[in-house]
Image 1 (cartoon, rainbow, N blue to C red):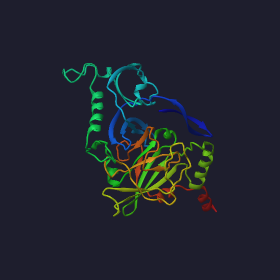
Image 2: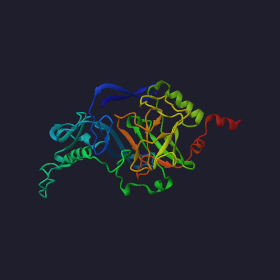
Image 3: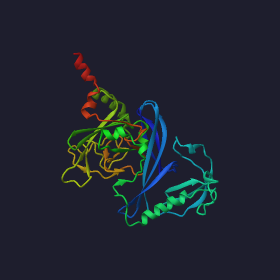
Image 4: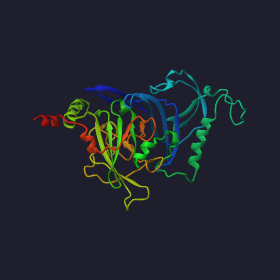
Length: 361
């Protein structure tokens, strides 16, 4: 991926992209083949997770999930090579590991799926004839899984479903009972330095129409960093808050809709084709209804992508090459809060400065 730097500019943090390509290692990953694209490439979804303590969630441990979608054409044979981990994400235990030998295969010379050989020494205690001494066969199994999926003429799941296996012990039954439809939200992880999701609220404002409100910690304007402080002051004065709140609608069970199909409706917050460096995108003042493109695990969990710095959103991913936070509100130990407040209720929680003045005079 292209290297980027997060720099201070005009009192805010700003992402600056470089021409230099870097390799970034992610540990604890899982892999799912989504299927063939129209251009003949294969879409694969990679996931990773880590644990961290969250003051916002009550000073308790939470699980952070990450996702990256890649489109590939070629897969290599498995081979071995010496390797040294570098440019690893900061919370990875791989930071402390020095050079070693890894077992690996490549996807389009852009992605490497691998494991350390020494981690699995002495794993063949039962003299399994299908297992070589000194390492497990997990890399071979992953490669075989990809090849088998590509050669299969039929799929067990529709391609609009993200094939994610969630254990029952991971599910938060209280959250699931609260709302029949719960969106899963993706946001570029580099944007989460000071611009991350804190709360998700789902309120059924009329039959089969769900209003979803997202509360973000802070809206850092990337391209227009110099005006960021002015904008923060404006939000505090006019709205009574520094956090950013964005709302959209999910519509269900229209007679013209297919079974299980749902529609998004974005008012003044549709991202169109814009990506993370943009911060003034407010498309769809008269919004059409947009078909949900992807679902997480089942049709009760439509997927939404936050694409720009001012939290403009869409049914599709405009930052395809970037790792993203995967916000799943209905999991135990989720890093976000889930509620059922309407946008009107949320706005009423804040007292803007001019309202306070009117109360005084």
